[in-house]
Length: 165
Image (tube, rainbow, N blue to C red; front, side, top):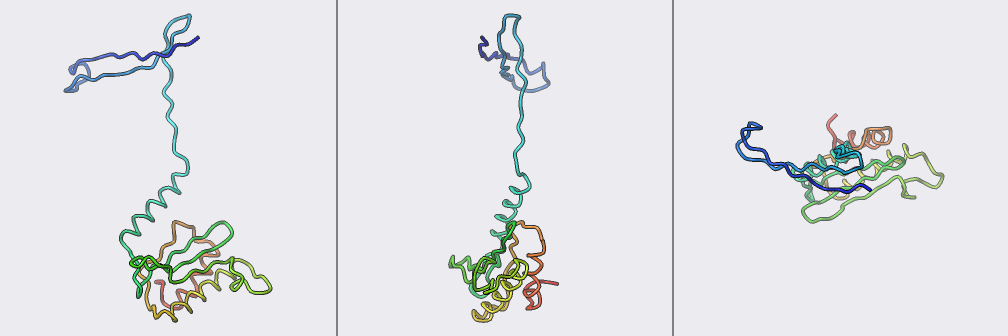
């Protein structure tokens, strides 16, 4: 039966070229043969790319805040759907919300998600005209890849002049 103990060794500063004495704790186990050290296991974080995209998004939202006249355009693209919002960060309100799941955008005979993403962009332009929005403060892609749905969504918006071509 293995017993866990910690061994504390103290070295002097001159032994390791330091200025202060350091206290080292080494985990070791006792067996019938003698003492042996357990290996140190370091685990890596999963999804480092997704976490960095979230961190970049938080940092960007600190710099670019939407106002009622210049809202922030936030777009999220999942594996199958696309969601878009015009956000007024000062009043904490959503001025427009559209997704490829809405029946009004999909139409009575259902269309593909790529065509629906283009229709979401057109609905966004109509909402901007009604709200007298001529400019957006920032385009927040939420770290999503630019696939076919994102491109279909961006075409009507760039024609209206919201995105730099």
